[in-house]
Length: 153
Image 1 (cartoon, rainbow, N blue to C red):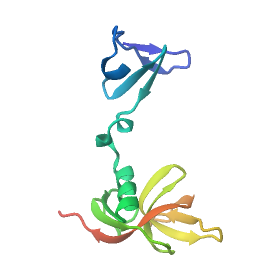
Image 2: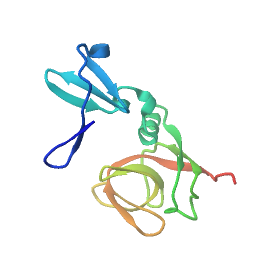
Image 3: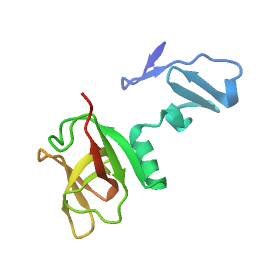
């Protein structure tokens, strides 16, 4: 059952058990709801369990702890340098240069395997694909590609 608010948001109705299982938590589908007084909020599973962690957060944590991490990159924005499905190996670096292929975050979006095309005086990096599209400026660079393993056909 779903309730629709005046703004058009769809809010699922929860069963109203007398006692909420496991410390006031109730799971419905892929979301976990927590009862706090009379206010119900939902928490996505990855904030409770690390099993649902996405590939970008996992790679960032590997780079921070081990200094090296691997991830498959998909899409054609970096062709012919990187083919879709290639396994990319990233390492952290003290300095990044124009032409490095990096893993970073630009305007809140994860960017895996794009080029540094410019560096400004304040140490920000312009991130772009191999087709000329610029994602934007960032200071959040986590690692650079040191090895590209092409996908097997």
